[in-house]
Length: 205
Image (cartoon, rainbow, N blue to C red; front, side, top):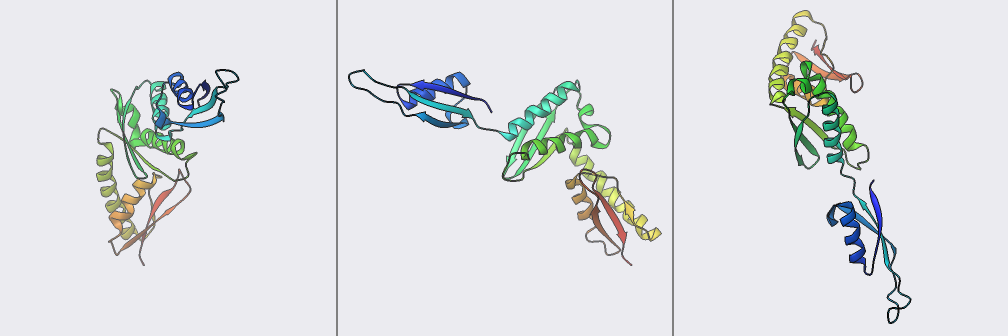
């Protein structure tokens, strides 16, 4: 956490000095008064205000920096548009090499999403859900998952055996569960441990 100690003849002056050195604004910092100073008499015996000013942790910004750093090391520099609604965070990635960031079946994008969620939640009192998208990949993936769910449900009914689907992040598992929720011939449940948790489709006997 970046912080600085500054002095001034008044508290406001000390804080302004710190903000100038940190190159930030007051709403982004926490101020701790170390010494309230002393006015003195006729200019004698005065003591300056001493404050410690620290930049507040911004977990969303930390996650953006993290993704940008990883993407740069991959050779796929990226810009990020972030939207925060309550505890749901959506990050849209834009890059000339977006396919590299998505990876096979979205595995690279899923990994970046999982790590970004860890970064955001590591020091947070509340749990935030993070969604990374790139060029509408998530929408296309949803359609693929819906078709996959229906096809594997038919297989489970036809063979009378459980069908396990490859590990996937929680929001993708929710798509599978939602698609098959109304089917009376099968039921679904999740098994395994994160990040290798997967969906099982079981025929109803």
